[in-house]
Length: 146
Image (cartoon, rainbow, N blue to C red; front, top):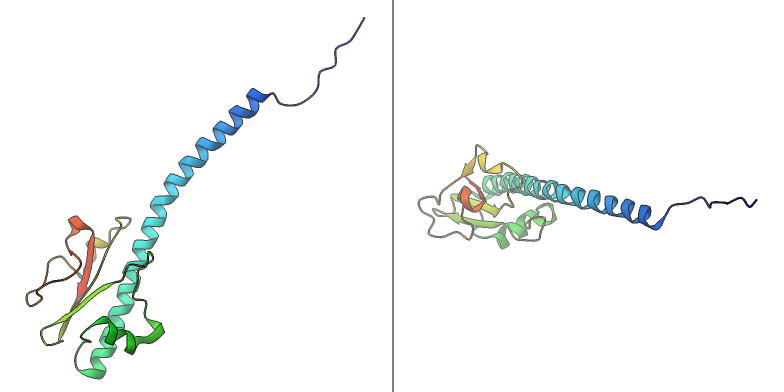
């Protein structure tokens, strides 16, 4: 009588099922990581703007006025200042009221609740004719000023 010898291993169907499960799990993980990255970029934006505010106050204490534009401020701050967000979009800046006040802003991606920061400006200040960022929460604009 002949004995049958079965080879040990996985069938093609079993392998395809495992690959499909891994692909589904990987896609779910990638989708959830996207929101975390968005939130991290928004947090970096808030941090950058806070640092720029500190450097603006140093500029003001030394010059008696805020810089008229980012080029002037960039020359003062040098490499210590970061004038672009994590996606390389430039931060918006405007000085007004004879350079005694300023507004600094960027559009957020919506990954953080920075719109509820206590020092955030939600409307265009009186005396500032135009600003390149809409500071309203509906447009995810984050603006700060003095």
